Image 1 (cartoon, one colour):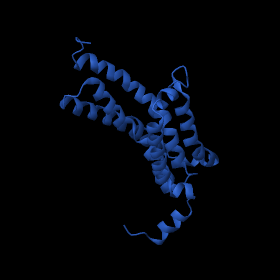
Image 2: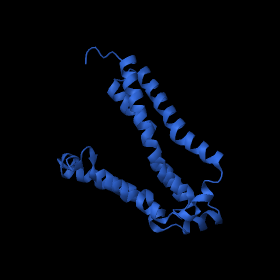
Image 3: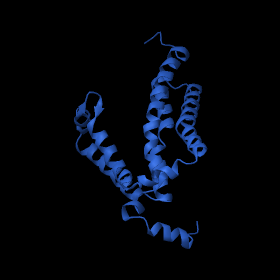
Image 4: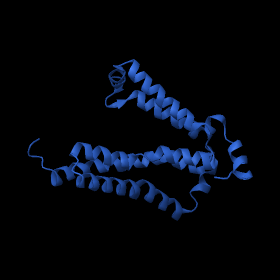
Length: 185
């Protein structure tokens, strides 16, 4: 890939944190793996830190991940982002309803064809349906900048995607009753 002068100028406007985001993510993954190996009961200890069914470490991690983006968004420009209602609605419907649904149903159908057990199949299908919002946030920040409307839309996306995925849980449970032999369970 050839880097043009404009692309180079755009990337130099990114902060060090933004420019090296893949490095930081990789380091965080390595630290997590090392901690998991070094402290065998760490997962159980972290799982016990919750309010009702909400994991506090995960909730804090998500807040820490989204705060920088939300803090730099120019909310005064939000009106400009939503001016073109057709584009906004199309983006929301395709990215947070149609996309996850297609990924879920497609993955689920392929898993059934491969003979995967229900538990494994639903796990794979939900991963396929819900794994794109982190990438969408990273791409929006990298391409349009951390204070862009696109970055805001990427952060707001999971707030829409989660209810869609919860709805798919009910679809999954119905599929289990109709498509899997549950007489042995």
